[in-house]
Length: 240
Image 1 (cartoon, rainbow, N blue to C red):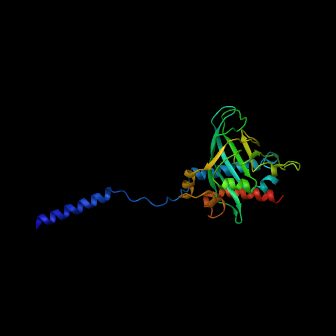
Image 2 (image 1 turned 90 degrees about the vertical axis):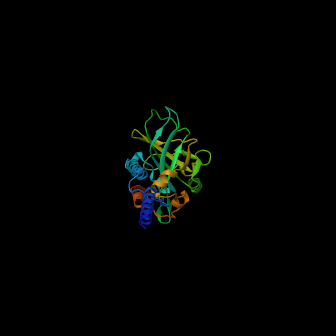
Image 3 (image 1 turned 30 degrees about the vertical axis):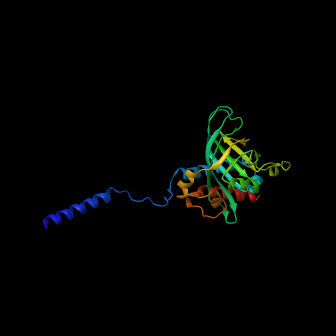
């Protein structure tokens, strides 16, 4: 009888040890972090937009921003070459919806020629998607500027000149800021793709471009540093 009891105790202890050594099953979706690289990027994008639009005569014209269907910002895009060369960056975009500006969609941009930019400094990039065709390209989450979507350097100033054809010229108007100088920027051959890592980091799961940019989901609270800044400047531009 004692042998039976000892054997039973040994079996129980072995089971407990095995249970402690077995990893817990992974959760189906990871909750988004309150602070992450993605949220830092949202704050940096808000700062870029605030600083550019606070510059008065050196910002995006009110008529242009007020007409944009979507706004994309790449804070501190890094250059891979010297004088003329490819760049790589991570950014985010938001589009107008019936409920206001959409939840952000995260993307990467790389390759192509970004015009004459002396030195290897980081450059802030702003892209305004001006019409439905441009928005359709953005919603596809994978396109090449100049091939799939036409782009042109955007006008700079408090107001766009009445005789300019910026409304008809391109699907995307592009701007850059380097060393405090803000100007229109020619983009050629740059590819934009969904940044899946940042999307999962921010939302805790994979969210397609269309789901976020068409207003299907609500924006998390951590998106509002950027969305509030965007809404403020777009409202001011539309009201003038």
